[in-house]
Amino acid sequence: MNILLIGNSHTYVNDMPALVREMAESASGEECHAFMLAYSGRSLKWHIEEEYFSERFNILYGGYDYCVIQEQAHPLPPEEDTVAYAGRIIDLCKKAGTVPIIFETWAEKAKPENQTEMNRRYRTLAAKTGARLAPVGEVWSAVSADLKDASNADLYFRDGEHASPVGDYLIAMVLTKTITGRLPERNFLKAFDFSVPERFQPVKESASDETVSIPPEIAETIRRRIETQI
Image (cartoon, rainbow, N blue to C red; front, side, top):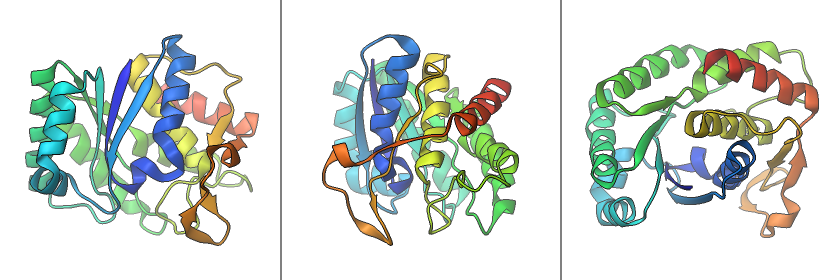
């Protein structure tokens, strides 16, 4: 199974594609490879206007089974831009026989009211294009409410925008369920934290330094919500 992830820092923080790869292998029992075209702060408009030939080549010739498409989130670009440029990527996927997946993002911690518009926008886009929807933001909102009193379960990184290791565990699990139709084994409690304390840059150079464990009760809360909502 080959997966391409297109997006920005919400895709690459904490090496999230590597977590998707491992979760998908756990869920499917199939070997999985993850590839990424993600650049800090970039929108899908930028991907198509500035990196079109890279995107085109990768999608048409990369032999991908799935392509995860993540739009700029904070702030959201104009809806017409998302429709136009996501549409271009989805069209390339269809030409290549690749399943397109819309990565529904989450609202900033200080602006939870923005989630409603994100949900509407990405559900509409998926319905119009026939792409699959990975409802990350909807699961994120529900799990945030479920875990609001838990001291070790903040889904957000300290900037209130990016994902913490717990948040990335949730994202990877939603993507895994959307791609494979299944969740990883219950004993899969692994996540990554590539950040250096008190700084966002630079990040840890060695992958072996990143691994963290998700508490079983938090993992189970995330799992239950995904089973209910997807």
